Image (tube, rainbow, N blue to C red):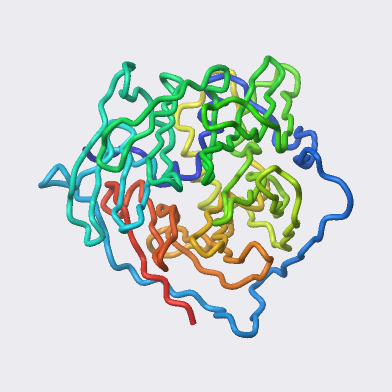
Length: 389
């Protein structure tokens, strides 16, 4: 059950996969501009953050991570073995849910890491999953899996029983989605054409009927070029505890977040100053290695600098953990830096994790990372205790 993916594949977004499937290489610099929130007007407060954390009176300024749980083995009990981790979820009791994309299974563990149960069945029939792309825990306490292969959402109760299904219809190309407390769904939808794609964040009703477009941008091909580029713009989105939408664009040279109310009306912008990380040395080799065999007639165009940010998560205290492309080389490989700030715009802390570990969820002062491959080459779920000083 050991995965064969190289660790640096954790930097390849779903967007890259879908673009490859559609054979539509796009220019990151052909993007039509900043994502435009719909319905915005007037002046929106802008909070500007410095390059490094600025101490805030009364708040901690240092975050130390201490690993306190690891789930995943290379051999032995198969209940603790993963093939290809795709998503991790945590419920109110701190039980851990791990979606295995290759096995088409969700394994459940209690907060001590002890195995509880497995659910999920491969197929295209009712309650079955063909190609799971993402799993989300809803505020109502259900698990939702986006099945790209069958074009549907499958809702599960936490005991693994299928609750319902919702067809995606024409919105099959979803990169990310989030559900609020009213069951409404925010989704990053993608529409492809011969000249590129249009990306839209759309707010849907609980039965997945479009209600409004929150933001959009277009990215175009440059003629008939056959050039592969490792980064392409995409929306990033999370929801705060009260249902506000936090949005950014990943894989661009802009480090900026928009905070909006549930209807998409702007509340504030958060703009951070940053120093671009250079694409050179070992980093350049990893980017080239991720492609493996280059399709005939294609070339690779590597930028001189990494984008501003890759992705972010938000915890149960509305703190943003932003994974950047800034890194430092260590004996065990590159460690990537995360910025931590809140939706008010207070820059709280900065820390780093091995590139192979993706911070996935933070709740109850614990940080859960999804490890595509550990140093021995197999997937794991890793939990850290967050110590604030």
